[in-house]
Every structure is written in C-alpha cells, then in structure tokens.
Amino acid sequence: MDMGLIVISFVIFLALAFDFINGFHDTANAIATSVSTRALTPRRAIILASVMNFVGALAFTGVAKTIGGSIADPAQLEFGVEIVAAALIAAIIWNLVTWWFGIPSSSSHALIGALAGGVYAGAGMDALNMAGFKNIVIALIVSPILAFAIGYCIMTILKWIFGRRSPHTVNKGFRSMQIVTAAFQAFTHGTNDAQKAMGIITFALIAGGFQASGDMEIQTWVKLSAAIAMALGTAVGGWKIIKTMGTKIFKIEPINGFAADFSAASVIMGATFIGLPVSTTHAITSSILGVGSAKRFSAVKWGVAGRIVVTWFITIPICAGLAIVTFKLIDLLFLR
Image (cartoon, rainbow, N blue to C red):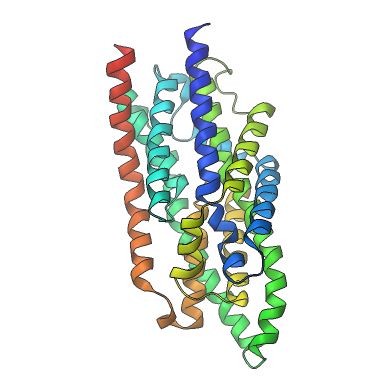
C-alpha cells in the first residue's frame, strides 16, 4: 500500500478519535444543567444529545472551512499531513488529561492552539496566517463574554417576570422547557464542534494531495464520519465534567438551567452562522456564571470558576507546545 495513503488514513483516524473524545468531553455542555435539575434522566439526556449532535454536525460547513483554511494554507506545507498528526495528538492528550481531572476545558482551544503550534514547528512562523488565526482567537475570547452577559440579562428578566410566583410552579414549568433548550444546545454543539474535525480532515487531504488545492468543500463521507464520531462520543458521556458543570459552580434550578442553555446555544448558533469556531465549553460555563451572578452574586463558587478560567487561558499555549514537541519527535523518527 502507498505510504502516503497509510499516513493520511492514520491522520483521519486521529481526527475522528479527536471528534469522538470531543463528544464525550463536551457532553456536559448540552446536558449538565438538565441532568442536575432532573429535567432529564442521564440516559435520556445522553440519547437526546447524541441525536441532536449528529443532526447539527450535518447542518453546516462554514466552521469546517474556517478551520481548514484560515490558520495556514495546507497546499503550501511540505509536511502538512505530519503537522496535522502532531496537532491532533497534542489536542487529544490535553482533552484526555482535562477530562480525567473533570476540568471543562475547551476542545476548540486545544485544536486551534495545537494546529498553530504544529504549523510553526513544521513550516515556521511565516506559514501561519496570523490574520486568520487572530480572528479565530478573538471569536474564542469574545464568545464567553457574550454568553456571560446574555445569561445575566436573561436571568434578570426572568427574575423580574416570575419573581413573585411560587418557586415550585415556576420550576415545574421550566423543567419541561429545559428539554427543548438541552436539545438546542446539543444541536449547536454539533454545528460548531463537529465541524472542527471535518475542517482538520479536509486540511490534511489538501496537504497530502488527496483533494484539490483551494477546494475547501467538505466531502460527504467526511461529514458523515465526523457526525457519527461526535454522536458516538456523546453517547459515552463525560460524567466527571457533568458533575463540575452541573453542581460545582452554583446550585442550578430549572429556570437557571433554561436561561444558561438558551444563552450559550444562541451565542454558538450565531458563531456558526458566520463560520467562526467558538468553544461550547466556554459558552455554557460563562452563561452559567452569568445566570448565577444574576440570581445572587455570592451563590457562585468563584474559586471553582477561577480554576476553570485559568484552564481557558493556558490551553492554547500548552497545546501549541505539545504539538511542537510532537512534530519534532515525528520529524526525528520518520522524516529524517
């Protein structure tokens, strides 16, 4: 078998493995609030999230095209396939480490940072499209701020509308509405996060000469493969992170869960429409913080929130460093 075909097959496997891990790593984004408030049983929540992730993954391709062409031009990279392999290995390592410790870090930050580090290691700083990379980083920074603000505003409005009604009656109604917002949140997760695996596979196909230079159309088999991997990963679940998201930031009630899910999903959907990758982890965590602050500022466990935010800031540089080291090892073992 042609060595190039073997290498690209391995890279596609890594991309789908990353997508699968992303699914169980980020399951909490869609279902943590609905499970913690008992709007859904864990089993039903995971089934709902898996189905909606799959549907969302097939609905859009704009984010995939951004990932595939905005950080670097894959057709101009001599070792583009190896760069993608290094990036995926680095991102997978970081995702597994943060999953093990129950830290809701960003798979998006991990992949973006790792790809940038891989390109730098394999082709130098000049190969990086700094304008495209900057736009992606800005989107990653702005989206959680928007999610926090929207979550705070929506919760404030809901408090004003339902503040004098019986908490039991209010929560009973919002527990049912949470099922809808959980489905919406899972759908938007698929529209944005699954696209990243599609984009990185397309990047590798172009770099390896298996797809025409400049052709950023996402092939049907790539869409289906990424959608299935994401859905299967979601079905596995990520209970360590669900516990952090659903209970350790502040005590979530159905009305809070509704506000948080709707806020985060709205931000993610907006980013998907304009083709920008954002972190679903950051969006939902920030919306929970915003909703909790609107409920009562002291109700939020800011120490836990602070540790999560620190992880946000260190993910890109750590994953870039991991990708640089990984590419150097690949270079030493296979390219020389």
